Length: 357
Image (cartoon, rainbow, N blue to C red; front, side, top):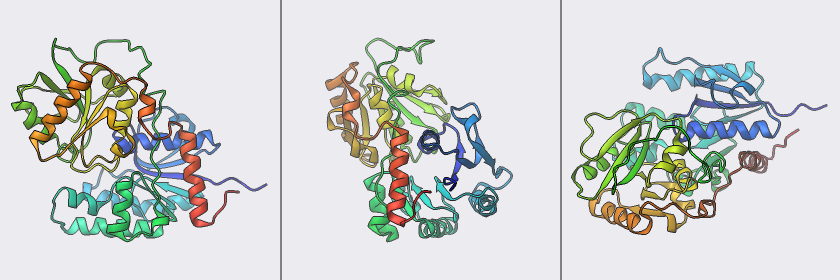
């Protein structure tokens, strides 16, 4: 009897620490539903998460190294570990030289361009690692049409090798139809409107500096809640609410979710927010706007305070404190992790000519 593929997932972390962290959990869930038991090669593990007890972890400890060298050490260790564990197909959510299916959650050339950053030595090394990663993969999955364009325009990847396959979002976890219990997420003031920005990574990339500058000087009755990394000296109208493991509750509690990213390969939080019934205010660089109806999103130019204020006023005028009716009809991605992984593996078979046993 032919054995099924043994599938590995290469990733920076198995934790709830941003969009790619949640995507790794969705991949894991979909693979388990299809009958696979993935082996997860990662630097950081949260064993309290769902499905953590159903998979095999291979911990690659990189903490002892300077941050700019960790990817290279991880890459060096991954090859022998892949062979040791007999992996047939490696799905990678990070850049390495040992992958079959590469998930593109952003490109370094695109990031440097969006951040208006001059490339230094380590930037060029990162791009070289990326190009090697893309060359070795049989399939590269673009999480948005924006990423597909970066791959074809900046890296000369063939169109058919890098199709757009949007990530899934759980309509059970992220839902308006949930009765929240427990203490309030934050204390409301009468007559104010509350916006949340999830920012677990680099605040500058998320455009938090621009948002804080706007909220500090506006006369509108609005407050910005920052969920994620701490902020120094929050100005007027800005509050930090810490790292959150209850983001569905946070989305349901606020009036609007705002993403002001300078660079955002997809932006799962936009989909999650809408599914929880909360409209979104987006900068034009947020690619998940591709799959969200205009009725529930408000788009602004990142470098224009006037554009942002226009979007904020339009959002308040249209929705106020009201939630979105029938949120699921306004987002156009699958809510099934099983369906997403089946499309992923079927596309890999079609592009490479390989077939599952």
